Image (cartoon, rainbow, N blue to C red):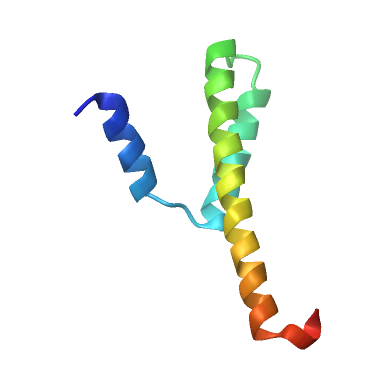
Length: 75
């Protein structure tokens, strides 16, 4: 199996919680703000951050839908 495909599968297996994603996003932000971070590394970090943000948003939207079902009178 190609290394890239294997890495993608490992990423899919390791789903982070929203809290873990936010923590990692804070780490990424600190690395992006560091003057020693090169352009290539910054692009990789940015890409990772966008992915984490998207996954966290999906999770939160799912929770919101569940809450609407459980407490419809609140909406």
